Length: 505
Ligand SMILES: [Ca+2]
Ligand SMILES: [Ca+2]
Ligand SMILES: [Ca+2]
Ligand SMILES: [Ca+2]
Image (tube, rainbow, N blue to C red; front, side):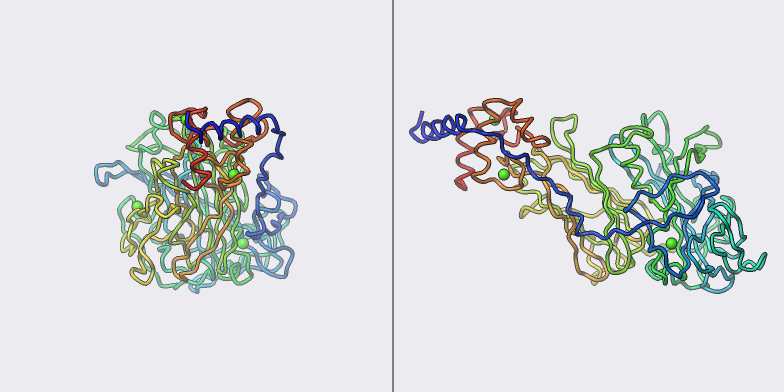
């Protein structure tokens, strides 16, 4: 045994003798980075729905403004199936009921740009991950009714079609929401202002055109054991956006996968709508199975200068003995969009970054100008794992994360999660923001405070001497963070490399 090792071992014995339980690592959710606002609570809802989660989602309230939300779903309608690049795909459309939960009537004027548009999305939650499977173009609304789906309605003018009264609701069927003559593309709309051109292109007449298109394999029950599916709707309107109420415009409800007929699976909405919540919240609410929350899923709203993003993440031990890091980023209504996503990942070789993945969803449709290339990543070079699409100045039509869309970022690492700031690069504006998240601990970070330093000696010593006491003292912090020589165990053989790493070697 070298003199140095003897010294280290002696030190550890002393430390073990002197060890006292440290305070468990502080793991604050630094919510100060993100903006929260109280959700509107549509007065006396006439139909059952899941309440918006307090403090998590919603527009300003009360104020003298109109405020459009998605109050109910209908359908979906299945339209047809076609094979694209050897894959069978089926098209769907969601119907909806819009509600004005604001305090003045909302314009709904046909033939002008002063009316809402509505679009649909479909998601799958499976194996601890939520992914967007498909998205539609938008339906141009043209005439509102004055119903009571969201509570007491004060009709603006009876049947005059062009204003949705305070508290009132207006439905549109799944048939209409998938009618190609009524659809326009997402890319001519500014989601931050709700402004669009009234004269717009229409999708083609193929069965997939303009509708929510999902691969049959993504729905096939035989290939998706344990999966849950969710339908989501988003609406935009100039009135609602001008009032600053564009951030509560998505709602979701669970979907059942039904019979396979005519080449595709039937889908049906089931259960209660989660008003003013996008489907990314289903990851948390149903991540442990239907109606069983996943406490490991963290979801936070991020208010940027021109709208809202929602970031969800989960970092937990996976079946392969590695920790899986899974992120989902939703752009609710930011026109600037997102062009990059970056996580401090430490030394990529040390923490063994593996299975680095990215998942987008095709925008689809005739004349769609956007590139669909997956975001490349830098494999954790320079201590940062970064995914990025082509910068806006190089290609304004690069595959940015645009409104009403959610992308996934994921990887495995052999160290457990610690608090990290995630950097989100904004596509059009070129600036970036940082938000709280998780990333892998540096190797040897035994107290999971995100750095390897002298404060880790006590914890390392305890992990060697008494694994159970270590687990109790450092919940969520893995003893394997100290497996310096990567042989699968944290033991005496790791002492030397731990000392070397401490010394900066
Ligand atoms: Ca709204
Ligand atoms: Ca892609
Ligand atoms: Ca540490
Ligand atoms: Ca080891």
